[in-house]
Length: 131
Image (cartoon, rainbow, N blue to C red; front, side, top):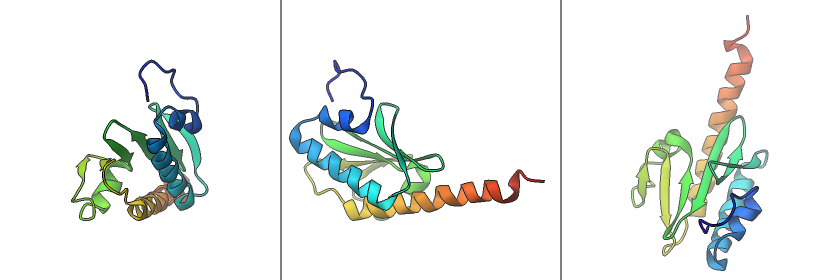
């Protein structure tokens, strides 16, 4: 996305700010996340595409040479072994644009995050604050 562009208001605007080849990857990442979390809402948060379901689920973004995926620290920790070939940080992963994007891994990470967020929400509603 070009720096002189206004902040995107939605994910369509975000994706449109990139070259066509990157747009195709971003759209596939978006679809992968949507399929893994059909009840999630799409928003822009921190100027990045974000899926929300009982809190932030996952963010993603495009950069010059990689796609960043942000499944929170628990998401990266849970899949640490499978992510060994990628540059990772606390809650972030870089998928290089010159390598195949592991969409199946993204699916499993998002499904994990859905279970994690919905489980926490159920615990909160089920009794922690009641009484």
